[in-house]
Image (cartoon, rainbow, N blue to C red; front, side):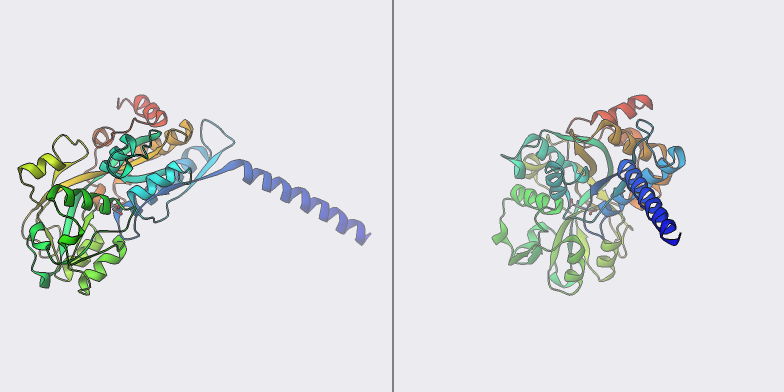
Length: 335
Ligand code: GLU
């Protein structure tokens, strides 16, 4: 009798576990949003999008999408090397979404600058997010007042794959200098550079990031300052004129400890990108989750406070909009 009972329960367990495995395998589809360093705003952006998606999915559809009741989407947003790394991973099919600077969205889609010979025409835009002024932060003892003062200094140009690295190199090109202009260059990540600056291991770093930003406040607290980046006529011609992905930018005085003046510079937009190969259903759902929980989304980081829906669907997007995003914008009357 005992044998029979244990056999029956073994069969029962097998059936139950097979059933639940099939249910899980069928119901959850995981996808990834590439972000940036853990102390930047991209990491918060990717995770805020995941949070909105999970909130939207559980509130409206009990974790299932409207279009296909077999599926529930689950999202992760790990920290990464930044813009160009994210676009590369989307191209490889490793990530489904990524946060990327508007200049690198443009260059990847058009096959220019770092993307020359590697054009990624299947790159698609979803929406843009916060402004990212390009900032050069210098430590107090380095006594640097502007870009010219960086001559002979130790400068972090950023890790390969980051947007900050690419944009620093574009700025250097416009200024007509190469690495040899500096005493030496480092390739630290965004999360390593502030400590290195405060410890005096580097004199300055160039970084494109949203504000206010906790890591930059840490730099300000150790006495470092963001320098204004003024471009002369030919430099403006070389860098920002005719380039829709760049704009003049200001970090208003008082943003950081000890910042008495507005810092004038140029900047980019943070944008969310995907691939033409990602399904319309998923992109629609991600877009809808952010736009239908907009007030909550804006509260996820102080850099999101000024966001407006109408700008997010227009500014800094040079790749075509993904059909899933377009579908939502039309349905919501935003387009
Ligand atoms: N703009 C930076 C990059 O693409 C990342 C900034 C951030 O992590 O917030 O490398």
